[in-house]
Amino acid sequence: MEGLVPVQRLPVRVASPSLYRCSNVSVSIRRSLSGFAMDKRIRFTAPSSQFSIRAQQSDLKESLAVSSSSIEDKGNALRIKEWEVEMYQNELAVSQGIRIRRKPPSKAPLGYSGPFELRLHNNDDADSPRNILEEITWYKDVEVSRMKELNPLEELKKTVENAPPTRDFVGALRMAQKRTGLPGLIAEVKKASPSRGILKENFDPVEIAQAYEKGGAACLSVLTDQKYFQGGFENLEAIRNAGVKCPLLCKEFVVDPWQIYYARTKGADAVLLIAAVLTDLEITYLLKICKKLGLAALVEVHDEREMGRVLGIEGIELVGINNRSLETFQVDISNTKNLLEGEHGRQICEKDMIVVGESGLFTPDDIAYVQAAGVRAVLVGESIVKQSDPEKGIAGLFGRNISHT
Ligand SMILES: O=P(O)(O)OC[C@@H](O)[C@@H](O)c1c[nH]c2ccccc12
Image (cartoon, rainbow, N blue to C red; front, side):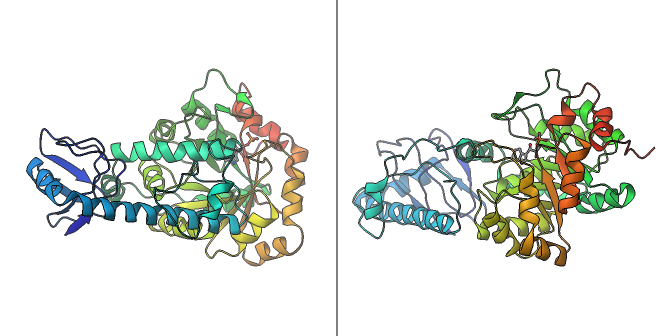
């Protein structure tokens, strides 16, 4: 099997034989090697295994001995292609009304001439994120690249094969609604957020999760983002290992399929997909992966356009309407009502989708308001996590005890 090598991430150790892992049978060289400059591409023959290539020092040297100028030409041609693909993907996202850019815009490779030439002069605001969601998204891209190196996809796939089955997230919401006559509660284990700062100082995720379960939550949402929400995958894992029975939503900013596998290995039963960040095609693809792994997907929208897009995608069971803009932090619970009025609301009923009202819900009146608008579940963090007794916080939120006992 042959591999042509993209140039970013994998470190090359020259001193000893190294094992390279990658999905397309490709390996990259980052540092200079035996006098060859950075960014040289190598082509070499790999053994039969599909995802790992054992490359000896001698293989590398041999490969690099191949005429370097032709390699360089090919390398640049490939870089130009890769860059163009990125630009096309950006265009596609923009055509779907997606404002979030997935990465800081990169400059065209040297010597580029092609359809995006004119665009390049238009790039002044280039390298700082325009809002918090964009900032988080850019950071995720870097973070995920790093995490992938520590936990290669192939290993995750093996772990997933032996993982216990997932729990029925959607079923739990439906049941809770039947049982209480109120929207099923997804209670969020949330220490902090960029908009509200620290919500709970002495934060014990397992204790909070157990209190939520006792209080009658149907499902739990666990923030796993560390940098902006002070969450972590270790919280998800700890809650699952502590014997909590509620299905768990991994609350993460998903930009890469790898994250879905990772979430599954850490005990998630569902993941969040944010329509403001992902194109229709990406959502479709990620949904397929979720299905394959037995995970539910909560697809989150914030405006009419995103709702329209999501309604056009097959196989979505759970739609979240976020009352908070992740771009401006503004919260307005009438957003839920507005998005459920008219044609969109009709289609949602027709498809028997479950709508989750998300964010900014504090009182029984708020719950009644979004329920009247048509939601069958709610996602609540701040108002219950802040209480000294989150179990009682749930009763306060709904205006009555909704626990099983
Ligand atoms: O704490 P609140 O206002 O009850 O909100 C909970 C939840 O809706 C919010 O945390 C949330 C909704 N969608 C998100 C996406 C990413 C991070 C966080 C969120």
